View (cartoon, one colour):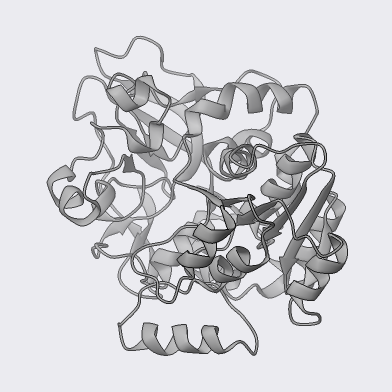
Length: 389
């Protein structure tokens, strides 16, 4: 089969690789009908996440049709149409029973290594680092799906792939980020990043009843998309984020702040950003936390910071004393996708939201390597790429 394969920094190729097969009787094999390139994939493309290996199949946003099931699979059958959450879950461990699916205790098959790096292993993930199991991803014609009765979400007739594809990651990720804020009707929610996750943060905060939603970025097309979703845009290259937020909140700061950027934050003319880039270049720091610093500074005392943006390792010069003295609540984590999918699927069916709004580029799988660069460089108005094998 064809698949997009990681061969090193900035080196993604469409290769011929072996077809997946049933390895455990709880497995299923999915024929992929639609997949996408995610911002998290760019962290791998840019080689900021450790423990990738040449030959790894990329991609964790995918859906398709069940073509084979193991003998122990009871809930899926051949022909079922499913969206597959990026978190691999067993559905039976203590964390899964609590709905903490992104920290499933059984699905990471490299648990011993992850325990040493993180203290305790997190869940297995498709198409990601070997610290999360090294599972083959979904930017491919076929995918093996472990614990097939636990993770995949059955899709009802009448909904297109593009309407439901993002149930696999970015829609629940934006939703969880907003839910973690405990939004009240009087709240101002400020969101850093107008990429795909930021777009769903905007719409989720609106659906959850925020009084005012603000989105901070520098890419005009992305800010326009956020504005269309109900946000007040701030272009950080054209105006001071701190001054504008104070103006919009009468000097009090936003109650809730969301970092939808993560470890590759860009900032113009800021000393801390230049400091981070130098330290990152000489491998003395892995992540660029400009957004975290800015959120801690501007957030209203007793407010909440929600962090769906991915961080991979070590950050420096984080003003934690400021966060402590202001009494800020910090909530983070990979997304507990299956905690949210039933509700979000219902909202799609009822027409509250059509997640396909975020798609700007559609192409064949073999065009994927070139589109990684387009997406990374934000060229051609690219916000979200969808691929069809």
